[in-house]
Image 1 (cartoon, one colour):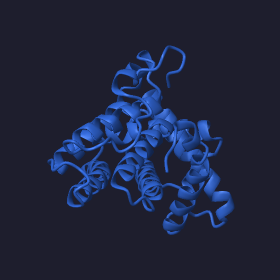
Image 2 (cartoon, rainbow, N blue to C red):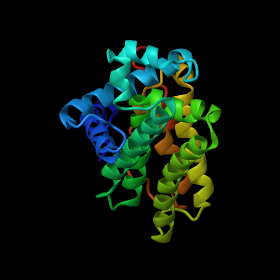
Image 3 (cartoon, rainbow, N blue to C red):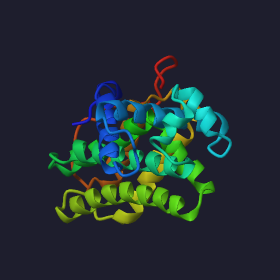
Length: 252
């Protein structure tokens, strides 16, 4: 189960290394470094540096020389991993897609109760987007200015997350645990609210809203939409709607 943001955060660094290991193994035809223990940490550095530079100056303005300086790898060293910025986009998109898919799967796969499963998916996505905000921002904003294949990749990632939420809601409706609502529309609205978290971080910082409080808020909204008439609430809410904004100094 997904608890609060701090408990979730502790497990992500290992996941990033594992995802880059999977990236390496899927791209051995492209990556010329044969020693996995050397290549994987460098992939982490390349991806983290790209996202950091992209947020500072934009992907189009970023050069491989900039990337070389930020990673500490020589230009020749970078070419051992990528042939150019097009390869870099593909690596970054695949990295984010694998990490998102793996995270949502890991936190929902053994959860049978529809309420708990829906909460787990929502919390995992919000917490992951807080920790990986540069990638989520890159996927939503930067890929809009890239060639059509990369735009399609970004849309496919968004739809995959929405489909996961939709399927959980639809299964809960079929089991007569949730109210009979438009599962596709509610999933789309949920995804839009999750996107708002990572696209408008300054707004929520100014409101002193923490990742945990935002996840509590969204789960409470979904509970109220899905709770059948006369049914008891699925679980005590960690924060009710009116208390979702935490006092100054406790925000994320």
